Image 1 (cartoon, rainbow over the protein chains, first blue to last red):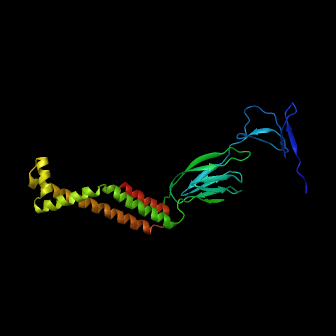
Image 2: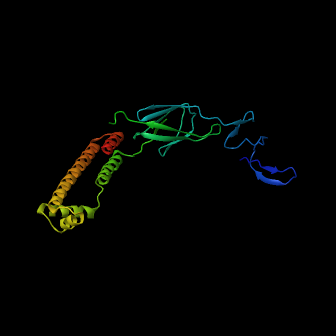
Image 3: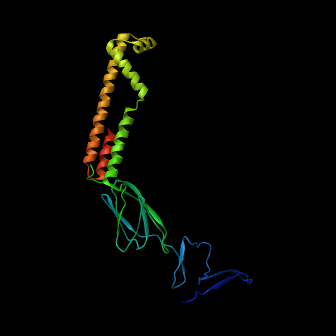
Length: 124
Length: 117
């Protein structure tokens, strides 16, 4: 069994601030960089801003189809939670109305939310 | 991926919800407290009989003729009966339609139509 490697984190005067299993990357940046808005490209070690999801929404009766989301994105709507896969996400409602759809953020994407309005033309 | 974002778990829970809303609509439409209803009924009985303590006290307070007040009370009672009957017919019809509906959005539409009246 491999023992995990340990790393001591020290300041420039030699005080050890902590010991961690690591390894972590220590990347210089400016104050615009935050954990909520940026991520590191693990190949180039560049710090990139998170992107916004690029998706389209189509409504058909009581159904809404969201196309263009990457897989493994958490989606919450009307108290129900699911995860996207590689197919478009189809949300099926039973009650006409306006609903808020929330998309979780991921490493590379900012969280998002939008509204959809559905109606049932055969409901009358 | 298909995400079922239903507001109701079953048809039965949707039906119970909308039937309840119909009853609530009817009670909102009627909007009379039980004591007032009892007073109206006492006055209506006295008005049919041509007079009584309630009618006489009111005629004196309003400075109107007792016979005229009897007619007014009888007309108001008849109108109230008509209104109650209209509300009741709409309530039972909406509930019957909801029981016969197959989808939640149909039940929702029936209830919206009831409120629009």
